[in-house]
Image (cartoon, rainbow, N blue to C red; front, side):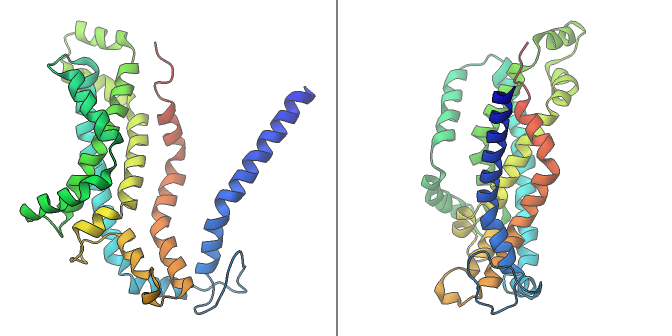
Length: 276
């Protein structure tokens, strides 16, 4: 018992230290954001009084009213489109025999490991030929395509882990393959889909390179990470407090979403861990 207790205390101490290390940069930025405008601060300095002037300045200078709306539109569209396609494709890869199935899985694996930075320039010229640059489609379509390999493998893994007896019982009762998916497998897949949606939302919200290359000339569709870049660089002459406030504005929706969905996210990651 003393040995187990010592191991527990050591484990908790390591977790506490890791949490402090992880939270220190965020708390430091948060304190800087709430400091008085023009105040020169560095490190972990607690302001004497809380001020929201930096947030107001960052909101107006970074055009975050448009940027956050654009990020939300793009992220929701990417999540919905990817989940619909990945669910159908994952179901097909899990249970349907079709020609060149192994080859298609190999291609998906290549798409999973290939650095997406290598596709940005070809994407730009392709979308330019289609007259889609500087539109929402220039951000939505590439991100759906880039997210599909990961999402398809995620959903395929879940479907393969489901009990065979349930599908066989439904087939005996005369249910079609689509009915099995809709009425039996999808309700079981809610935790896995919820976790996948959270990850996709996080990736889409934080995407910067595609927005920088594909929508450089249309402020109406530029996303929050691109607006945050407005405050970067010496030529901007930006107040560090305003820059910190802008960073908090961009990160806050992701933080709130994660706090609200963390239990579902963990349960979705564990879904399918025990196979029949």
